[in-house]
Image 1 (cartoon, rainbow, N blue to C red):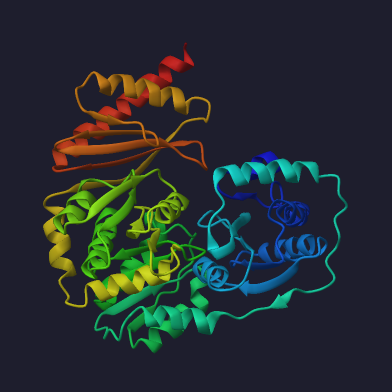
Image 2: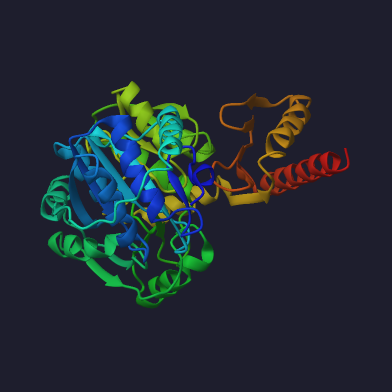
Length: 449
């Protein structure tokens, strides 16, 4: 157990059992009780091998504090969020490390109504947990009350589709994802023609090596679309009929336009990494963009602050709807995407956009937590002299008429993350080469300074 290393900006996670273990799980249950004083708590877990044991000790920590504990068992994060938000729970904890590899695990706590903890609450929880480290761990003997919300959750998803008739043929990749327990039945109910791909890869759908089998199967079957989820089901990505990833900014823009078309509001929240295409598609449909720092919790906070925001999303694959509890739900987003393109004009739209926008996949530059802020400052000073627009909201965002990029320090790993988009291939190549050079120069000067 390594408490300081386990606590991140908005959640708790790390390698199991070196950082996250059963002792931490028990103390966390005790600490959350001190912080929130809940009467009823819902716990759940994803498909990792270490999750059942961690969940038992987390539940024991709550039970030792006199809290009534309910167990959703193995479930995708969206179902967990829905279950907390739609029921009378004071607190919920999901055991997951999201798309991080199987050797890691962690805890996502949410407050009443499924609202995420903010940075201040996580810091306060860390202080409480540190004070409890000398407490004796109680080995769990009783089992929490089991809860099955699958029928209610599935019905809530079905009701969002408003009798839509789906004509597309899709290929689904749910490898190591907890959505596998729900999606096939849901798609059968909605009469969606689907095929399952069998694979063996890690949980991040944005890594090319994790999409290889899906892309191959989409081409083989001549399917209309491929859909792939991350490990806990709150992120989703799509592959077109050529077996190519649909750029995440395109996906975000399409879903935003679909939300605007329903006429329930004009405000769309996106994170700072959203590029030119998202801005153009939203404004084209007379939408109003709200820009927030990266991290999907910030999208939820924005929705809470401004009830006129009807949809929010990140280019990482997190998508939220105001009229569905403001939770990021990769299953609902997949259905909304399918519905948006039942007219089969998806390929035309993608082809048209690819002629106008050149988006490079997110690029990671190794950089320690100590050096990252200094490197960002050096690049800020450089680009200020170039006469371009600069924003320091969540890292460094530099904008020009024909290109835009955001460079930010990762909140979870020792990287600087670059997202870049341009209106021509030449501009994209020129700018990324320039950014790489400036980062190398800054790091070199710091190493020899």
